[in-house]
Amino acid sequence: MPDSHNPVEVFKALADDTRTRIALLVAREGELCVCELTAALELSQPKISRHLAQLRNAGLLSDRRQGQWIYYRLHPQLPSWVRSSLEQALAANAGWMEADVQRLGAMTDRPVARCC
Image (tube, rainbow, N blue to C red; front, side, top):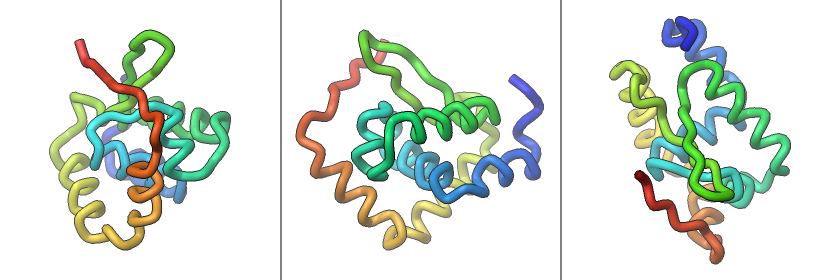
């Protein structure tokens, strides 16, 4: 993993609206797959996948494959200041995330993750 957890790299990775929304949804839910993010954000799979790759390359997210699904979560080695920043941003901006959270909750065919 590159030295991506310095403040400049973290904030560069989160400087895009879509990447911030993805990171906050993942922080809120614990783990999400691409199909859940496309439903919540109402964006195409290629666009979501491109942003996920950027967040993964920045060291903010990690992924795991389970069957046909790839699940994303906050990187387990994420420094506490980054994790805390995301949690505080999520708590302080519930209204900003409300529509995304509602669309995610309304998704009827969500995959069931069974980790490890």
